[in-house]
Image 1 (spheres, rainbow, N blue to C red):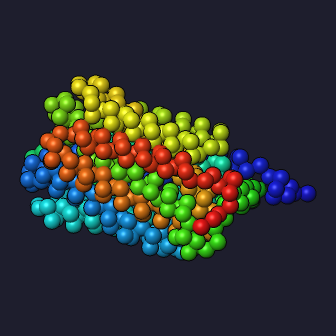
Image 2 (tube, rainbow, N blue to C red):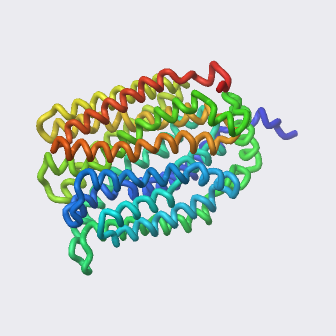
Image 3 (tube, one colour):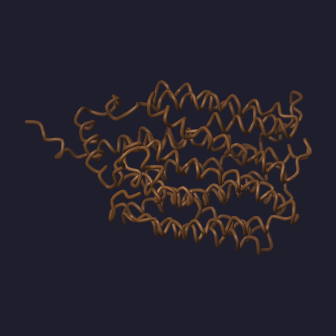
Length: 429
């Protein structure tokens, strides 16, 4: 007599899914994030070569997010209809081609156009992956799972600094500037991996040939049984929900800090170190190293305690305070320590935040709810670099920009603490 679905243990299937999926998705997101932030390293040469001011660079770096936001919800609706495998492959191939083509930029207008096209191509990637993970992992497992996946943003910062610095040293080879080599070569992995996605990424547990029939049933049953933490009624309920909009505002503060710091970090380090491109790349990786270690540990603690709001708020307050304090320090070592603590706090928000969010939007139209939060939030990806650049031009320094980022992140923590816990209240608009 075979066991009933409710008696099947899902843990072996969850462990297999984590081993099989997360490393590959992790690699995909490293490539995605690297193609977003490599413009910060390119700026070490490109800004002078093309005559870009801080405001011009900040606007071009951030305009990526305007098209990303505009196309994000439509992209995720398509993903939910045709499947993650094909659509994620399409996203990766097109963004890789556009990223490489950025080497052709010769003016501010061309820079804006290239970044806008890159955002349109990548729209839907992150929320699509998070939606994909909700089909594989019960809510109680998602904090550390999402944190492990999103640690790729930090690993991209760790490996991206030295790689980008080395590529910049190719300046003059084959008639191309170093920043052109950077764009050309860092776009290629996205195209290659996009093709690989079609062959190796299973759509759902029922399509995974590396799970037994019993493991498939156990995993699907666990996801369905634990999906009752929150329920959504229809797509319009997502747009009317005050909780969802508050989460979107909280997420707005995260890209303000992540990209406000990330795009400008190489130039902040150069101002303090006066080192060469490779040295700047290595030093720029240090805050990401610290943050990568703490991010996964914080996600695990959030899962163990089954608590999300306080974890988000504490991480935001610590990160915000450290970024603001970095503006008041003298000396590169002290500045890097505080920037590392700031990145640690910022990165530690991701796992608890997305677990909290996916619990609130529930299963019905989850792709739309996740995309809504990510779309509104990612406007911060435009605001952060642009405001930071404008402040830098106005003050001829980076200190006021760091204070701006710190204050915004702390406000996000305050708002996060006000979003009700879905374990205690059902969906309300």
